[in-house]
Length: 102
Image (cartoon, rainbow, N blue to C red):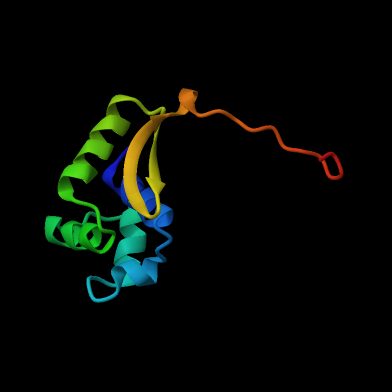
């Protein structure tokens, strides 16, 4: 996973819009272009985004390194806070119920 993909994932997991995350830090178009791999951003801007998302640099680096080493990991949050990285094969799928089969 690249930096732009991770930031987008974290933003969505935290229920931030691009406008809300970028407000007072950069233009929304800057964030959008970065998330789509079109441009690079400064380290300072990245740190400001992470601060707004309430993610420490250490957590971000851990998530990034785990996702690079094994693409089958997914970031998990509980109560809006980073909780752990979960190996996707450990996540169990719950079968969907058909209507009226309760």
